[in-house]
Length: 252
Ligand SMILES: NC(=O)c1ccc[n+]([C@@H]2O[C@H](COP(=O)([O-])OP(=O)(O)OC[C@H]3O[C@@H](n4cnc5c(N)ncnc54)[C@H](OP(=O)(O)O)[C@@H]3O)[C@@H](O)[C@H]2O)c1
Image (tube, rainbow, N blue to C red; front, side):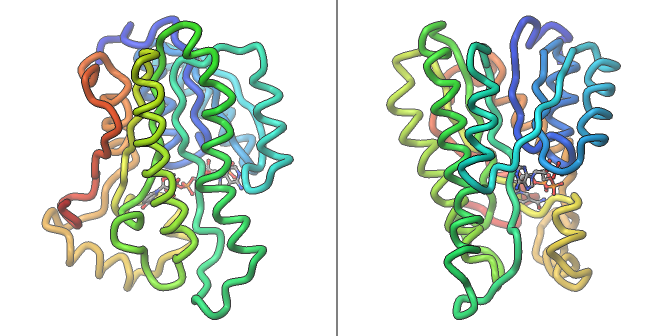
């Protein structure tokens, strides 16, 4: 990547203390960006990501917010007031807890939808006026293969929230295209991150590898590459689309 590709641009990445978000943050840093590294529980990891952004040639800062409830999202949107954000990557997300349909509680459903979908909407709503004023901006929403295949057992809320996020991408892409803002989705398959150390068994991951034409899980850097592309000038006519990064696991 050109080391000046994102120079003078401010990039907000939610959930950038680990996995895909951290890899994207460092990649934007390599393009000269100033990266706002949002985290929830892992402050030290977020601070380490800022160090890696700086080593790669960019700059960064950290901000904390729990995005699974309205107060946490308000904390972040209040912090964003008066700051210009050129690129937003709505990446924070989690399955929270596997739960079969008949055991799903209203509280769990609310938490999963808020974290994976509603928070992304309100964060976008907070940064869009500035993008409109500057007639420039890019938003990438991190969905999931679960949005298309319904997710694994116990992941109904997660899959539904990711499908909502994908629909949000298309709606926002239509409304803000005339303002020079591009909105797209990156939809990862199974990527080797902490997410699976929490939510998947070895047996589940071996099953995914066996069903994947490329025969392996993806890496965070491979997803970050698709995010970077969608925010680059090379994607200037790509609007409201989803790039599936899944090694051929699901072809759409
Ligand atoms: N890994 C996969 O196979 C896969 C597949 C499809 C889609 N995705 C999506 O890709 C995105 C990144 O996943 P990942 O695999 O990189 O996960 P990860 O390594 O577990 O990282 C998740 C990130 O989200 C943040 N986060 C989690 N709960 C949060 C909360 N309540 N409030 C605010 N932030 C919260 C975490 O912050 P802290 O660590 O600081 O708490 C962390 O930075 C997610 O949206 C996920 O759904 C992942």
